[in-house]
Length: 279
Image (cartoon, rainbow, N blue to C red; front, top):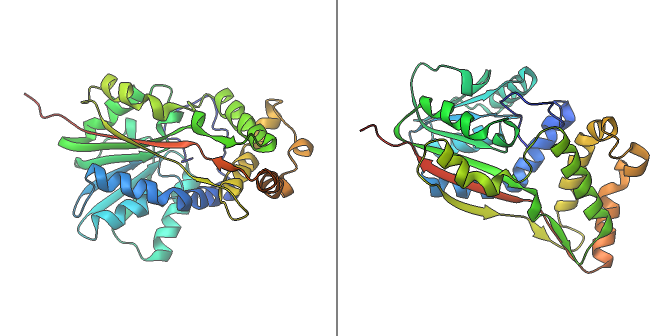
């Protein structure tokens, strides 16, 4: 999940180097979903785009490839460590059509309006997602795009039930919910967009699903548990001994393979709409 751009009780995932690397590995796994969402929404060549809560920069880089060298993507995050990390990645990749800025984009003023605002797994950390969008769209030109992809953890499950996988999902849900995150915001994006004064958005949902020894979902879930472990211990949800992080992914995999089952990830729900022209 991307680094939050809005104020919150506390950000349970933290900003460690492990977490920033985890964001990129997770981003790689769901990159096809985000890419298709942005293409379907209308992100294309030459656009100037604002990436809200850019985290380690993966959504910024994906968007930069869509807008091309004639376009520009500005990634903003309120965490300095994330901005520095993403900037270093851009420099190492020789990307010249991106820049990263520290701050909360909902509270910032920019020198010119954007053709689109995008964000992935970021509104879930705002106390008032609709209010955040309402502030953000001040920075979008009339007719510009607003595109967000948020999570729906209610979609995650195992078939047949794999007890360890389900236990991990419970830990994740409890830790994120206790920190103030909205763990099913994806399914609520339609009314959120309406409350922000936008036309009802078009929507799509994607998820990872798989069985057998090569399914990537086990690692994704185990790494998320690892980043949440300090918060889980603080909140008395689970401790390091119970979690057994070093073998967690393999134990989940072995259990699912033995059951000849499948695991389903959270749903990644995208919504997009356009800022209306003034009368």
